[in-house]
Length: 274
Image 1 (cartoon, rainbow, N blue to C red):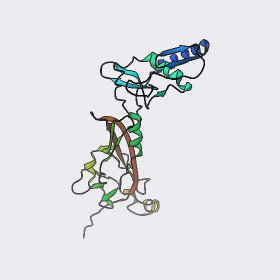
Image 2: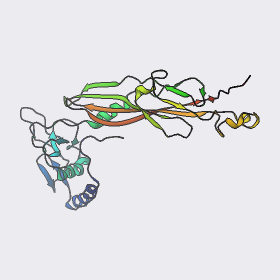
Image 3: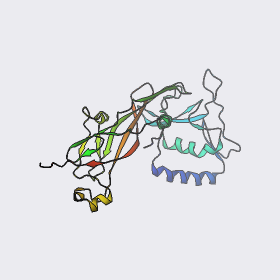
């Protein structure tokens, strides 16, 4: 569920890119500089325009989302962005400037939304898998079995990026999915539901006990066993949700799943008259 920082160019623009590639080749050597697109120019693409009050050139073409114009481009003295000094980026710079408007304020470029950086941090978190236990340890048919896996604490990270913005990334378990192994549908629970007996609410009652193959065929009670399973394969999945912010509102990053699988035996209690 990865998100991509900056602007995602729609599929029709890929056709435009191909067209631009043909046109660029036909024109000879077209390069992009901070002052425009220059064709018939020999040499590599460079930038000599400097930011007032500094000695740094406007070298990198970045993209952002402006509240007034939406997706737009701007020149910056530092990454992230397309390096205009690298001729390999000429085609992408031409396409970006053709497809998007210039951000309204060039003197103070808008904050770049560092979605890809936040996603990489989210992916690097030690996102734990469920640690599963049952109460009772061996199930009893037609009585509730509680599954327990205490939810882990949220994870967080804060850092100052090269452009000076403060990036906060957070991850927490949003849901716990349980597949009980007897053919019933997988069920989503809130994380606190997997607290086990008596506080948890993630429970399931099995209709059939589980037995080894020999017991099913040879024992008088073998007919009460599940016809194929020697135990139920129970799967519990944590749905880790990530989000980030840069001094404003939280932005969703999507989810990453972590799963654990255990086998669970179920027996039966039979009353005997005496």
